[in-house]
Image 1 (cartoon, protein in one colour):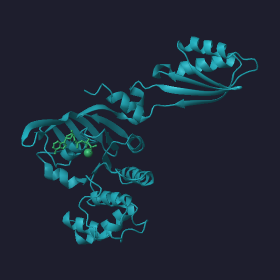
Image 2: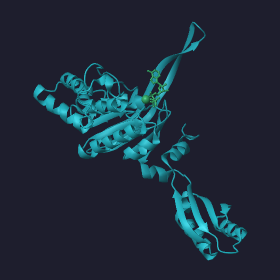
Image 3: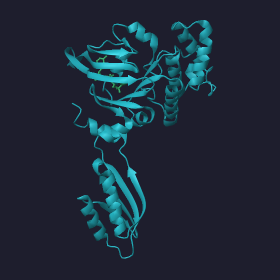
Image 4: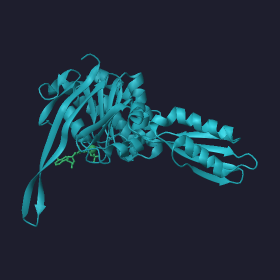
Length: 338
Ligand SMILES: Nc1ncnc2c1ncn2[C@@H]1O[C@H](COP(=O)(O)OP(=O)(O)OP(=O)(O)O)[C@@H](O)[C@H]1O
Ligand SMILES: [Mg+2]
């Protein structure tokens, strides 16, 4: 369909390995890496595949990159079948499966890109310009690192060069497996910003895998959460937070009126909520902590505040603690992933 860059339908992949039984004996073992994975990626979005180790992220991106054949199911990338029209798919995608793989340590960043550009068949007149532009887009030029030897690169620089290499042929879809793995927080943040820029300014569709919820939350437009070879949720980040029943914590800082009865306040709030609330008094100041179910959010918050007001409590600050993606993830994977 128009606007859909990736359509994966019911992908199944099993690996055959061996289980050692003693020194000489081994037993055949089947690992079900993907157990029916379906999702679509729309044009221009940064789509994240988020899941714990062994969830099936790399297997999925390898199938979409035509590096691995699925056992069953279908996938189309930019309208081409990843099995039957693999060559067409390869012409149109840029892939980085590992930040450090395949670069020459004794060449500079620019020389490495030039080498890969030649390998990808870019004409020599285009190549120099293209390499220069990519060094600029990923920020290596700005860092003054384009002409440094690869062996002198920090991991952050290597990650950028890897993105630059994936973008050399001006692909419509970028597939990056764990692009921020091992980066320190500032480098990861820079790379995240780079990916957002690439998608918005360069009009690219980006598929990244990650097990970092914070990264996924910041960089992705939409997210699929994968666990044990199955997609267990797929939505925009906001939608994911809303759709799972994650509790919201309300933290209220307030000042009690003179001769206030803490007991009365506690009883009144219990009446509103139908359960106990946690109140930490500190002289005239109190911190009230209330855990709300998602359905209670609006109306109950209002009722609590009104009740405090009628008791003469002066509310100074109300903090609403939203669930993080990590909460969503735990909620989804604990027990319910089978
Ligand atoms: N070549 C292989 N042979 C056998 N089993 C494999 C092979 N590659 C992956 N697996 C298994 O398939 C499952 C999915 O692996 P995959 O690498 O796709 O997960 P992942 O989500 O990328 O994990 P990670 O976060 O560790 O990179 C895991 O159980 C893994 O052990
Ligand atoms: Mg992986």
